[in-house]
Amino acid sequence: MSNLLLSYYGDDFTGSTDVMEALAANGVPTALFLGVPSAATLERFKDCRAIGIAGTSRSETPQWMDEHLTPVFKWLGSLEAAICHYKVCSTFDSSPKVGSIGKAIEIGKAVFRQSVVPVVVGAPQLKRYTAFGQLFAAYQGQVFRIDRHPVMSRHPVTPMDEADLAVHLSKQTALPISLADIVTIRTADADQRIDALAQEDDGILLLDVDSPETQAAVGRQLWRLVSDHNAFVAGSSGVEYALINAWRSEGLIGEKPDFASPGNADRLAVVSGSVSPTTERQIRHATAEGFEGIDLDPLALIGENAAQALDAAIAAGMASLKAGRSVILHTALGPSADRGGDIDRIPGARHRLGHALGTILRRLIEEENLTRAVIAGGDTSSHALKELRVEALTTLLPLPQTPGSPLCTAHGSHTPTNGLQIALKGGQVGTDDYFAQIRDGRAS
Image (cartoon, rainbow, N blue to C red; front, side, top):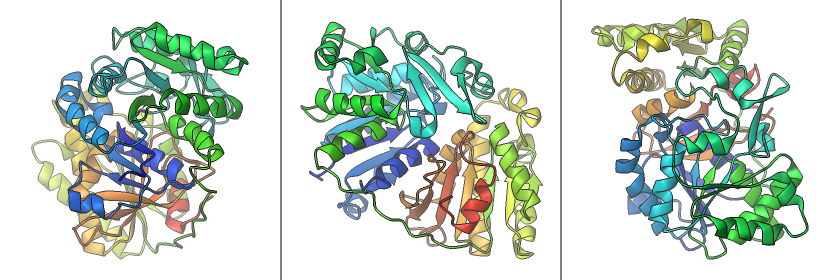
């Protein structure tokens, strides 16, 4: 696959589809795999110009990363794409013990034998901005510093209590960290200044993006810094949005393609493990529009009588679907219903809960011949999708008004889910009518 512009590993499944959407919507055909594919499977997507692996490292330990990221990075490097990207959430939520971005950068730096690793987090398309190394994110039409964000500062697993990305990363890695701030990026001699920063330390180089203008400038800098190719970078899908500018200006990619609406699905099944207030509003909006909402007890799904709880959830979902209604099965309706404290007292419970939700969804798809589905919650998606026996995803319908959780086409050898149209929705992503939008096959 000598024509590859980019390979990437996403630290959760929703973030992985975010990158795929950014690329595909801008004329870079992309395939996303749920693990390292066989040679035969990879051959099916040989015309793609970007290849991704959807992972779970956002919810894993540094020890897990040592064991699992190293071989995946080596495989991605073997593709010899121009750039290999370790994709993280644009809210950068992580900690030294869970989803350590610093640890992942150390591993990638060693595998790619690289002196400095560029890191780009700002993505104006997602309303994420970095200025002088500080991260800001929008919520309900207002922009907050990330440590004051109403949701991310209270994330149930990795709350963001530090907006300075260098300080945040310094708790996860001993690598030196430099910053190319918005002033540096905008100066006439930006090339020389950034070269000096890149050569100064054997570590990490943060690059600010606070606007479309700085994004375009950073894209040019990234492409220039990795001119030797097969280079390793880290950051949000802001990496792709920045690079698209550089690729298009150099004639490496064409104009944006058109995506036809797949039309309305008669019934949609949703499973949600998200406790986000954004998802809460979306569930309430959907039930007001005719969806059936079904409360699930997360502790029952992972407890001693988990099999019975699973069967009861499937039966309830099937009853709604047989009655012709779309259905949302959810383990929480907003932060006030969060059972995270109880769940975290049980080793491995969050992973098991994700797998349980995936099993419920697969059974509903199999029994009712569903053609479209949604998994809501970043960590949930990472574990639930594996239960659908899907091997790869491609973009079916980007959502340009709320990028980050497109409608995808699933590919695999399991007949009921091969060709399934599925969206993986992060907790903070989408407008209030997101579920109805996916049901109706609307881009906006």
